[in-house]
Image 1 (cartoon, one colour):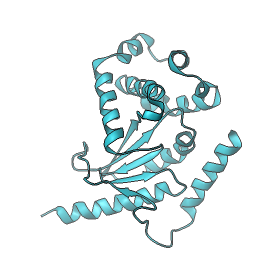
Image 2 (cartoon, rainbow, N blue to C red):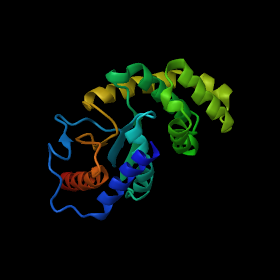
Image 3 (cartoon, rainbow, N blue to C red):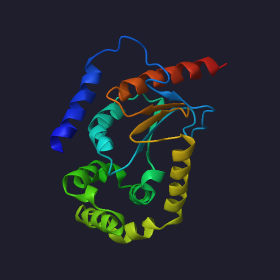
Image 4 (tube, rainbow, N blue to C red):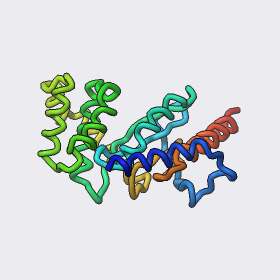
Length: 215
């Protein structure tokens, strides 16, 4: 497992070193969504990351993604969206609920990366349903998360509303796998060694479109 993950990370790192000879092309490197979706980041270029905590490829991407996000310009708004997909609806819903509970508590920045590590390095990835949810809760308690607040937020109206929105976004963006990135409600970039470079290119395209639309 570790060797496979390191191989994926190495290939992703290589994509940053090797300059592309041609611009990314639609249908090969990304898909243009027609019609485009409205975004929630007014005045900024919105980038969404669709992920699932128990996805090995999402976990492989996470270290590079964290560094990449820090390099984004101030006119870009990055948001994580825990995917809710039909192929693993029940399992992905649990993960989405965990993420939005942590977000409601203001704990995502503190524990998100460490939780990813724990799930994939300490056996959480092999669990399902209530057993998995309890395993995560026990791990979070050890990290100092207030479990009384966690339990309250876990079934809160706020979290339920965000779950419905995540399911809606999964459908309207026509996702068939994760990780995936979306730029400005218009472009979808699937998992590949070059996906962050392609996303940079499409952010540039969205920036040009925004500049051209201004009076």
